[in-house]
Length: 219
View 1 (tube, rainbow, N blue to C red):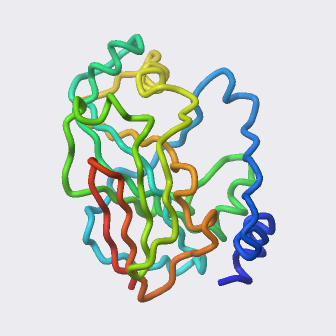
View 2 (cartoon, rainbow, N blue to C red):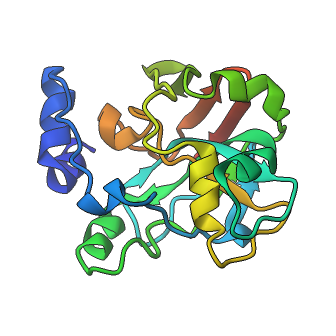
């Protein structure tokens, strides 16, 4: 596992071994003008509690703990306020990643493909927005593997608000009730950052306080 981490991201591997602070991520300049995102496959989303098999083409399965929200109203060319009013509830989202496959795909210039859309998961319950929105940028989270705490991410530091993200997504494009959008990985909410990828036999637990949890056994 250490060999895989060292090969995929030497800086992350070095920090996980020494305990040093992980160097700040430098986002692309496009982020100054718009939210950045990618689409996943809604047909490969599974609920919490589903046993998960490592893809046959990967030896570096990772998790990504994210805050998700579900639309309750249609949106089209919405303002941020209109978009925020369309949020029907919040869930916990886990974006599984095949890191060894992702490394090559990202360097192709086309972004993530089989490294991402093979599987995602979400909590079994959804929480009403009035419970989450007042403190959406101050939610505490945790990651446990085999009962051991490996990370305590937080939701603070979003570059764009939920309303701004949805307004951007709805530009000249119809969004429908039931669509799921996720925040992107909470800082510290991936195994790559924690220096601990997933292995067969692991029990994974991802929690965002007041929102819910996701648990998986890795086959």
